[in-house]
Image 1 (cartoon, rainbow, N blue to C red):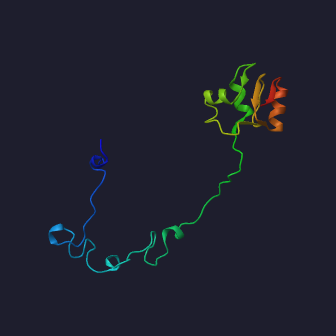
Image 2: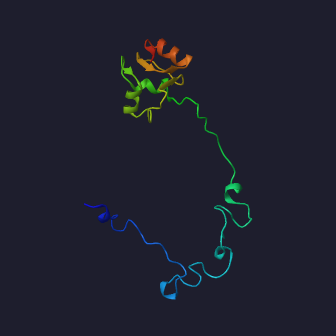
Image 3: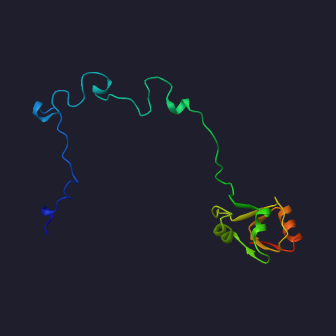
Amino acid sequence: MKIHTIAPAPGAVTPAKRLGRGIGSGLGKTSGKGHKGQWARSGGGVRPGFEGGQMPLTRRVPKRGFKNRFSAEYSVINVGDLQNFQDGTVIDLELLVNAGLVKKAMPYGLKVLGNGDLDKKLVVKAKKFTESAAAKIEKAGGKAETV
């Protein structure tokens, strides 16, 4: 193989448009710019999003919401939802995801909230417990273990 024999793949390189080279080329006379107007002029045209002086869409639509980049996102479950498990079950985030009680495992882990009642002896492993959740688990004879 010699350097002068190397060529790009077929179709990879398209020839340049030769504008203003006669009627037969299909790009003669106005060179594909039509007749007169802003777009036919040299350096013509407007910036993206410009609507001819009308208030642009990006400024007409109100700004909404705020996403805190530093917020800690937990997978959340209530104590009442743990009532379905058998006595002595060790409950962690993976088990809850497989059971379908938590949609997905969030980066900061599991947080157990105190809504609902519990009367089963369960071992619950989570990153965080609310005071009421921990109290209800302990009262039922279970354990609230912080992972």
